[in-house]
Length: 237
Image 1 (spheres, rainbow, N blue to C red):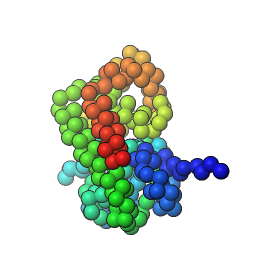
Image 2: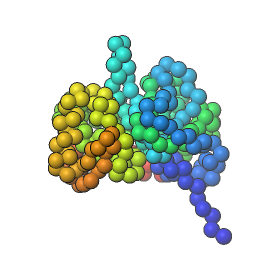
Image 3: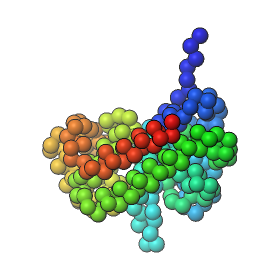
Image 4: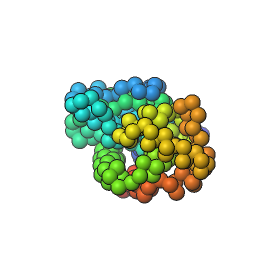
């Protein structure tokens, strides 16, 4: 009789050894999130950790005047809040759903227990946090040195990777907030990508039409971040 290996749908969790996967299902609750739904609040005690399946979450920094800027985007390659892997029970940033979809939700108590009792689980989580840190540093350079067009292409390519499909719901106004640039600049970039046949944008939905063209426009940060997460799984094995 063939035993079917459990799959959570989250790439980080599914890279775990069979011994960890065998008991994983009991600790995960599948939760469907709507766009803009909050999952964690800065300064508050965490009750859970979310492992995106086909949802995309944004981690944002909020300034004193109320403005928010995205400092991280999390999909099926990672989890929120990464503070949990660093022995902290308090969220340092606010997180919310960016593209609606599902996450595997694990209680903080279960997460902490696994970090203590499973050497491999702890290694996977910590190596993943290292990839998150690398990406955050890379995107700091990206925001300073690369054009809005390049950054938009990078962001759209990464989002398509995370949701696992070429079409997803997104408004240009929301993308402008996430990139920290004026809406008019994002609209110009979207128009340029549409004219070259890389994407189609209609009524708040983006469709990746020509993935190759989109990746050629995207800055080097797309491949750099993608490689960092892939390598983190290899290092953990």
